[in-house]
Each structure stands twice: as C-alpha cells, then as structure tokens.
Length: 305
Image 1 (cartoon, rainbow, N blue to C red):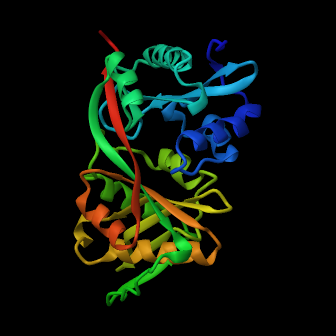
Image 2: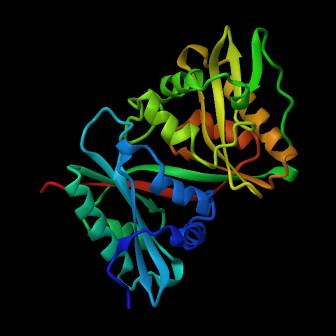
Image 3: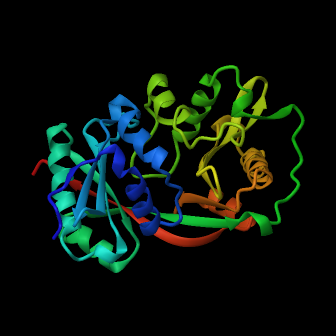
C-alpha cells in the first residue's frame, strides 16, 4: 500500500537520489545535492520535497517550490517522479495532489511540471488538466571516446575557471545577461545576487575548477557551468554567452575547455539538457559528439480555478 505523502527526512536522501537516477539516468543526482536542496537552497524558492513510501521503501517523490528566478509572480513547480517499478499504483496521484495543495498554500497561481516524453507520463499529466509547453532534450557524450576539437582562443580572450575568480559576481552578471533570451516556458532573468549565490554558487555539485569562463576586457563574456557527482558523471548546468559577445565561437570554446578538464579529472560521461528550440546549442553539442538519449515536456496548469 502507498503511504500518504510526507515531508522529506535527511535519512531519505540516498533513496531519493537513487530513485531519481533510476527514473532519469541522464541527470546527475547525489544524496548531498538532495539534502542541500531541502535544507540550504535559496529561501525565495520555498523548496520542499514530499515522499511516498510502500512498506518503508521510497517509491516516489515530489519536488516543489516557487520559480523565484522569474519576474512574473505566482509561478511554481511540481515535479513528480515515481520509481519505474511502482508506476500505476497511485503514488503519482497522491504526490501531485499533495504538491498542488502545498503550492496553493504558498500563493502560487500556475504550476509547471517536467513530464517524461512517453505516452504514460504524458497521459497522466493531461488527464489532470496540465497543458503541454515546450520540449527539452537530454544529450549524452562518452568522454573517453569524444573527439574534442582544438579551438583557437580569439585575440584578447582569456580562458579561466570559476575557481580563479576573486569573487563570483562577474559570473552572476554573465549568467543573468545570457539568460534573458534563453528559450523556455519561463523567463529566468530576475534572480537577485544573494539568491543566485544560494541557488548556484553554493550548491554542492558545482565544480568551480571545471566551470570554464571566457574573459574579455575584464568581463565574463561566456561560461560553462560544471555539475558533477564527484565520481563518473559530469553535467553542463548552463553554457551561455552574453548577447554582445555572441557569434564569436565563445560558447564552443568554454564548453570544450570544460569537457577537456572533466575528462582529465576522470569523469566518464557528460550529459546536458537543451530546449528543443535552441538550435544553436543543439548544433554545437552534436558537433562535439553528443547524442540525444531522451526527451521531456514542460506542462503547466492553473491552480486557481
């Protein structure tokens, strides 16, 4: 029997990370990251994780919170994941109902949900009133076999890492600038510096020594954030270029530099997620040898009637 969803406990972290990896092997999840998101993430996000059990075993989770990076108020997320072996038993329905109840209590008006690109998951979302938004693609690269190109560094450009920064504000400013026109359902361009530090700079899976930057005239012009599991998996958290510096090859430059560092550090594979309409980044990743391994839809539902 599936339990009534309950709040996350720190002891759940290993089971939750294993469940998320089983449901989505194309992302990097660790117990440390799960615990940090619940206990130390940005306060504005109001993040909470709900757990469903059967006979003491974690069989599903709902990740909930506010989309605090958007200038539009009232937006939230309810990402429900059920272990593949437990789907169809009611855990997903119970978790989604509990997640939506929590978000309404936070004053949210619209809930966004990430839904796997398969008929069962899509049907689940649509039967509950969710409407389809944009599609994302998961891509994977086997680092050992990757033929990473030697890209020239343009005159005046300095390659550096986030670990080289005296303080992270230049990276924050570049991230905010690059995100203003990033394809997606929700604009993620209104995050404050303290919230950015909490959400990104202090997250436990950010590897600053693998996060590569292109610096031009003292400004971070392009960057590639590196997230890792500390063992085998490397994930590009975001590769972006400030609008004033685009079409100069800087995104490819920092991405390849980060991948080379990851390979030297012993990581076996790299994963990334791209909006299906981001043709420029998809083309870059495919030139580097990434292959599409899965898809995901963003769905949304109005919570206030």
